[in-house]
Image (tube, rainbow, N blue to C red; front, side):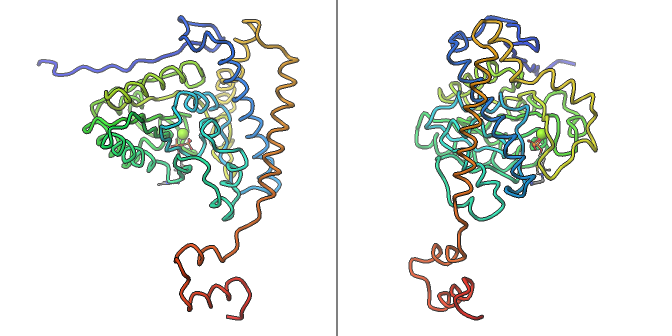
Length: 355
Ligand SMILES: Cc1ncc(C[n+]2csc(CCOP(=O)(O)OP(=O)(O)O)c2C)c(N)n1
Ligand SMILES: [Mg+2]
């Protein structure tokens, strides 16, 4: 026997669960303002998340997917990307989206449960993907265009652990590898695909190793360490931008909430697993680090919470002030000039004429 190939998967962490620096921090993390910025964004997202669930529970929002526990992945991603890059997100990437021009009220409109969500498009990114793995293929298409046009831009696909079991995920990996495309695949491994646990999903030891079959690197990062997320995504983006092809990053995190407001995780997830996960969550970790470095206090926390509540409150008001679209729009936007017979149907649909 001779060995014909050998592979390994690296794991990266800068701040451990006790908020200790386990290795020297990257340059950006030595700027305290950057870490404070991350912290404020994560707290804003969490405040928003809590409010969105409350809106759903009181009948003011449709089904909503919580980001609780995964804030570091999303905030680190949004900070690492350049404005001209393109994000093809899954449905809980709010931390990245708000850094790329999407407003909190637009996220509420998306989950509003009616057609009002179709009225906005404030960023050049893709809208949130609900068919869980298709955005990987969209990102490959976008990356293909960037390469063809010789643009120094990168496409990023964000998906979950469950998405990595789907055919579209593997197709995207393969094409990205063989054409050496400027794309980064970010897998938020939150340990659950609705009620299917990570271990029931795949025999693979890591999800990062799925990149190996496609001929490029796969890395694991501590997804609750915003510094590790930001650093390694940046590195993968610059590698792609420089013409050195794709990378798959598996961010290890935990979904602390239900899958969506239509789910009850208590039916399949143990209390103990949840407690263990809470001990590793990203906001507490960064807060502890900031306090130990002398840059945060309970008074600062109090005023931050007030600011976040105000910002989220304004977003809710903006969301509630958007009026529903009328049935006219489906006629108005299909033709330059609406055909006569459809004019009649339009009048019937809007209640202006008997059918
Ligand atoms: C093609 C397709 N299959 C199944 C579903 C139903 N579905 C929605 S979310 C989900 C689980 C996805 O899990 P994961 O990729 O880990 O993402 P997470 O929800 O954990 O962020 C499933 C099966 C869907 N929306 N689309
Ligand atoms: Mg998942």
